[in-house]
Image: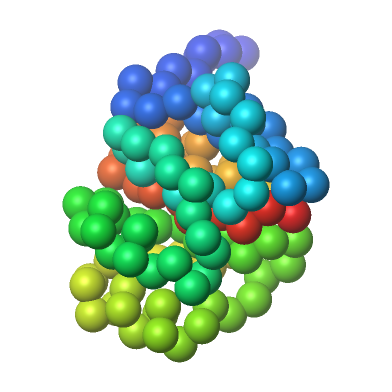
Length: 117
């Protein structure tokens, strides 16, 4: 069996997460977070669509981690993302973190808007 070390050339991966926080590239971020290939931001949650819309237009897909369980996002946010032609995948936050790391290691243009569990 051949093992290949994973490298992250574009941005740091999500190292871990827990109740109310994320650790990204060794930095602890409290609360919701928006991760883009070149930047990380505190995110105001589903009502903060401007932060996403102003920065996520160059992504292939944005993963939205909705917390411990998959839920729908508010219609105004969904409509704004659709209008801006930003591809969106809704999933639980743990799944979004894992998927983000895998595609980040492949060099994909992805982002993640994550609500903590």
